Image 1 (cartoon, rainbow, N blue to C red):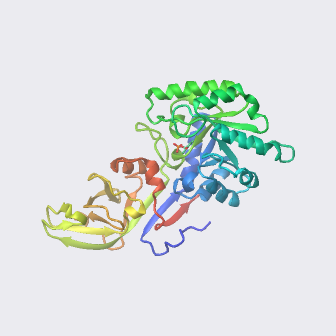
Image 2 (spheres, protein in one colour):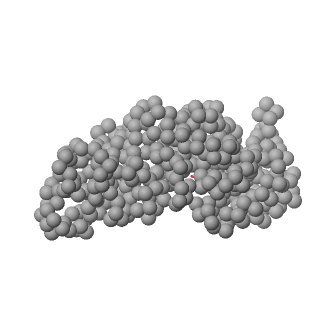
Image 3 (cartoon, rainbow, N blue to C red):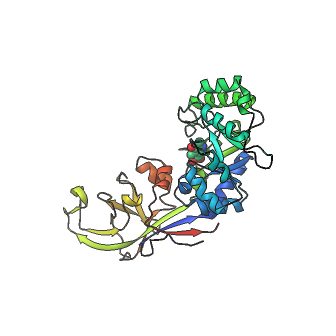
Length: 369
Ligand SMILES: *Cc1c(COP(=O)(O)O)cnc(C)c1O
């Protein structure tokens, strides 16, 4: 595996991705559920690299993976012939033969997709073995999956399922990161009825957060993304290990006088003689422009305040109290002192968005796996 991101040879920033931590998180989810854990690797493994993430999880015993898009699944299949790969976004028109060719598992999200897969499956059994599919039922998100009226029709017309193997029974939780939300139990109860109707399918409801709602949500399998990558299941607990570390070198240092301003909009006015360091990370690299004033960078665990606005390619830091920092000194932006959950909170977003926005201009270094 190549260690560095192509096209970032001269980058002054280093994104370290700890695949051992991904595996550790996988084991934490296994221990918590005592069930089979499938891995969601959509959006290029939440921005961390779907192939290295899959490879490390395969070694840890994971055999079922999910993407959102068909193209994402094909890209993984071309590198990894053995694993099972499901596509969550549904079976598009004229895609059935692509699914068969690449040995991918469609998720059927409405009755039309079920009919199309059934029709295709009649004539396309492989070595007398039926083709397979997941079926997603909407139990409360109004997003993807069979709406309740279509679920009722399917219940009355079970022959719609005759010609393929209904492998995974899927639904998705809307509020699992809020353990006390009433929709959690409502969705659970709707799903339990479906499980009774389709006892031969492998039932799978929980994503990362719902794993921590309790055993009732675990069914036959779980389907986890963000927790593998260090995202907290909810605001109160985070047993997950941090996977990424983002560091960047100081490009330039200058001293400014009291009352001088820093950056766009002159939004920061120095209250004293100030030493300003500039580093080459900005919102074009996924460092959020919306971080609040309490966001910090760190050096040897010591806080360095951000000054002024985050610009497209640069951030400015107040290093007045650091006599030991020079051009080239490596500053920590995301890591043990400022993890993805904390940074997300300070930017008014969620860890998912921090991960999936990570830029392509960083040098990337994979550890372990
Ligand atoms: C993204 C997604 C997941 C994974 O969710 P996490 O919260 O990242 O664990 C699981 N199931 C579906 C349907 C999804 O869209």
